[in-house]
Length: 294
Ligand SMILES: Nc1ncnc2c1ncn2[C@@H]1O[C@H](COP(=O)(O)OP(=O)(O)O)[C@@H](O)[C@H]1O
Ligand SMILES: [Mg+2]
Image (cartoon, rainbow, N blue to C red):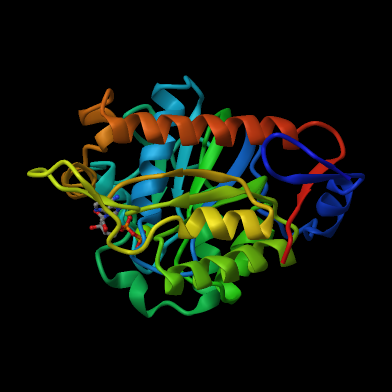
């Protein structure tokens, strides 16, 4: 076993095992899509969707990749608002839905398909059926990466999605609080159980930079995600501050990486996106996969 510069332990011979175990026949693998990555956390409200949106837009605009964004949070879809998507997807001649594109990213969300609140009463099998339609029933075209905004939690739904989508890897988002980090650990364990490599951990709402004194205040504690990443042998991808521009970008449907591409936070998203790409490249080398210390 050798430790590479990305901070992940790679073991030879494991990647074939991952493919073999991931449930052939019922998977939702999408032709033309090179890598599918999940943006996840054990906990809601930590900034998964915000992170997924800014990373997807950054991958498309800064790194010039062909990018899709799938909102797998069927019960609480936020991608239509955050990506300013209007209307319903059109249907192609071969009866596939055409993703709604904005900021160079092809998006698909339950929020674009049913009226608000309609999906809330759905049981598990209906959710999986909906996800099937939102993956294989969509004309994604060729994509370098499909970013999946995962629903919060580590239950059956998340496990099914992770297995059936044949994820190339997962990005874990956490705030620096102990309770959020505990849930993040749970998320890491869930992915490792289904043999999905962890691409790294992003710390969101790391600090607040006071506009009057210009000092960084570590409201939720300092360095928690970095420490968790180190302990679990994962790559620490970077930190994002608690910032009005990030919040208003999500609320107004203009991600901060679009409205203010040269800002510190946009550069931070760009750097994280680049680290994800470099790790995917390593994973795509034959017979490599990360090993996580649980
Ligand atoms: N770094 C940040 N700074 C300020 N507000 C943020 C930040 N990250 C997320 N938010 C806000 O926090 C709320 C929850 O974020 P969201 O991305 O919807 O979380 P999740 O998808 O994990 O539930 C949203 O209102 C969002 O705008
Ligand atoms: Mg969300």
